[in-house]
Image 1 (cartoon, rainbow, N blue to C red):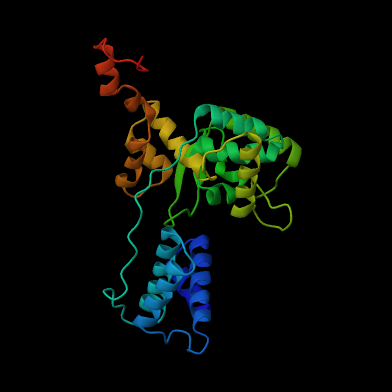
Image 2 (cartoon, rainbow, N blue to C red):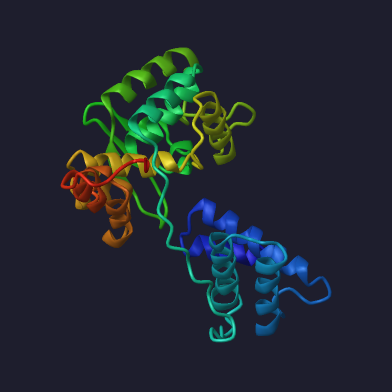
Length: 285
């Protein structure tokens, strides 16, 4: 596993990707305890992925990550050929994100009575951050003069700037007065490091329940909501792409399918027919 870490670092992969790949590869090796790690053949890989899909009922996104990790192991770490045809990549699902309304966002943030928790959720929504990006923020990343937040070494090992909301800046200042963080903006309560993704996810679901939000949403839905609300308020896709840090504009266009403003302008033909007719009855007499 040391070689895996070293090659990940040489490729300048993010910390989260390194941890994810290492975990996937370790479990792959453990599935074949009688085989030397790295000696598994194409059929072994294929059977392992089928086992995860059929027996373990793993999600499409999880299977895709495991596929990428094993491919990285063979191509980059072991330098072995990767025959793709017997082990096809799982076709991704084309699902639209679930969006929180403006009212639901307010209810969620109002439910967060702990100022640190309110600050975390406010930063994620108001700047369109991934939870891992918010977790790894440092105090020096908050630029109150330019009203920007710097995101360092994010997904794809990229840096970017996103917007700093005036209201979020006020919440952050109130949070700083009470907690006085020194380096990490949101330090862990238990170890000398930043808060982890699971901690942020727990905070989100705690206040989601208190706010009475029943939609099937996660903390990542705050990022989706940020992008959708910007689009509904007239911000163009190019600038939204830059704020989110998407490599391709194609990734950002998904929000065209979930914004409400265009859909609200469309009148159902059923309503048009009823409006022009006096022969429709709600109930037959």
